[in-house]
Image 1 (cartoon, rainbow, N blue to C red):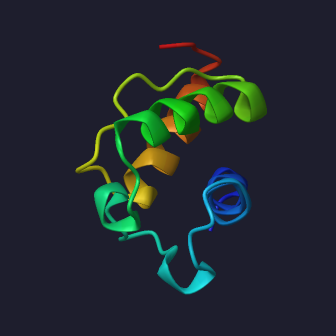
Image 2: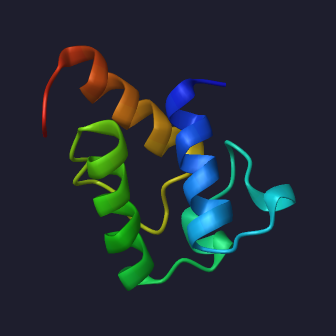
Length: 80
């Protein structure tokens, strides 16, 4: 997995107390018991740790999709 995925995984496990066994690329964010406030907090962590703003973090996104969005923004050097 990408460095971005590993950073997201670490955030979920350490900051949101998601059991490591549940954190997989295909895991849907809502299935990890992340409510709307947690998604906002995760968005801020992504911005802080990765230097990109991913505005399309929704409860139906998978962790893999979120990592891919952040990777694309990082590669483009864009803040979207």
